[in-house]
Amino acid sequence: MHKGRHAAANDFESSQVLAPSPGKIPDMLNKVVIAIFTISCAMALLLVAIVLADPVAGSGGVPHPVIPGMMIGGDGAARMQEIGVLAFLFQSLLLLLIVALAALGVSAKHHSIKLYLLLALTWLFTMFIWWQMYFGRLDYLESGETGYFLGFPIATAWQVYGTWLGAIPLILIYVFGFKTFIHSEEDERRYQQLLQDNNAE
Image (cartoon, rainbow, N blue to C red; front, side, top):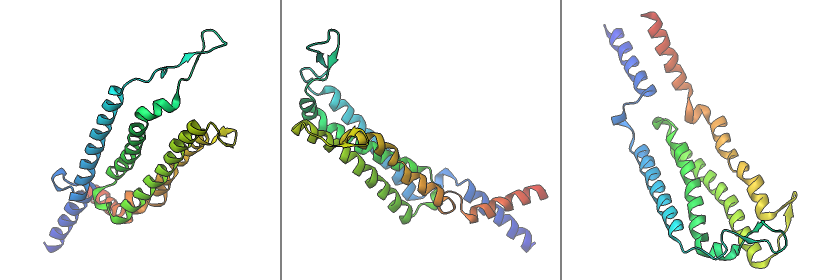
């Protein structure tokens, strides 16, 4: 009788680990959901502010002085002055949203300070890349001069090479932290136990 109760308790515990009840989601995971909602609302407000911003003359391009039918860019510095800060904040929040969604994809029982620290470092890394892109462009608009890296102006090079580079830390966390944050050895043991118990029935 004691062994039967013990086995039943193990089955119940395993099922709870693999499929936690929505009403028992840890408080930290609730905070992640609230953070995602808050970030999304802030991004929506920024978009509204960008749409409502006063249009800059020539922001849609101006006719080319030599080639008929061709349009060239207008005053980039003027556009940046009007909505540049809003655009910078929007992209920063978007990068933060990506990290928050990654945290949401991790099982509640694997949330830890270590996970949040790694995700925070990932966000800071992508923010460094975005910072170089944004302010590199501003420097060019103000000075009219730029260096080159692998065939591209500096700000463009950060966009071309840095965008995909910024995703690598998240991939590394998934690959090397799989048994820590995604599917631990304890999860696998309990899963195999559930399979054995199910086959035994």
